[in-house]
Image 1 (cartoon, rainbow, N blue to C red):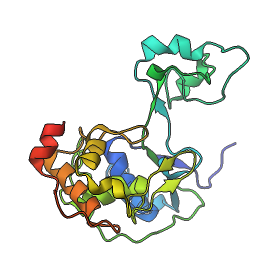
Image 2 (cartoon, one colour):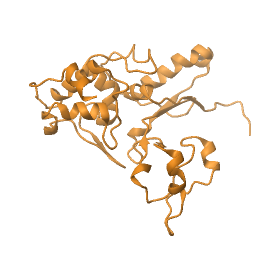
Image 3 (cartoon, rainbow, N blue to C red):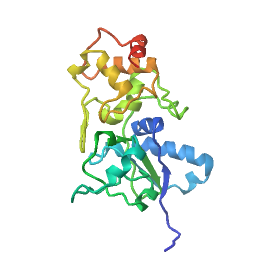
Image 4 (cartoon, helix red, strand yellow):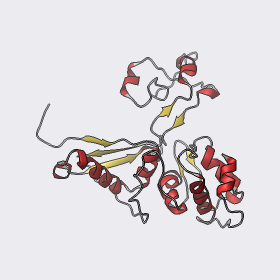
Length: 252
């Protein structure tokens, strides 16, 4: 049962602002960041580390996310866990305690029929494990990430390119081509819907369907910067009617 060989350590499990930025790093950079922070608590990290792996769950095409959160659990839980004839659905997505093992101990048979008020929002989370016998796959990045994790409650990037790399690229991909799997991340490249400035501003601030609202993480200037970046890159050339902080403020 016990051995002197290497083991596996779950070394990072971020969500919120950290997760957006963490997932935008390459797998190799994520492991480096975990080692940097972990060694502050356990100085022996670097001596005992063998290799590691990192998974950005919202990039896994069969799930496009990690777990769901109730919008109003107390109001909707009983309806959601009631049987609908002979119809049941396997999964943890209506667990009373999403993403935690304690939730598996409760009787929560998921239901296929959800009322509109039961719709749950996916969190963009990621995981990094150390001491695995799996190589970390590297990818190139040209964005300066040194200040990304200075504040856990906000996104610290200020220019549009950095905000896109730290937040948007995790879903829409670095080249803006989008992705498909269990759901779909629309392509931003050559997207005529970006012609109207107000449209991407509204999406960034308020979200829509699987697109999470980012208005609480980005201030007016950051929203304007990333919208202007998207509208003038990836084959888009919408240089007129730039997003302004005043316009963003009025749309909140």
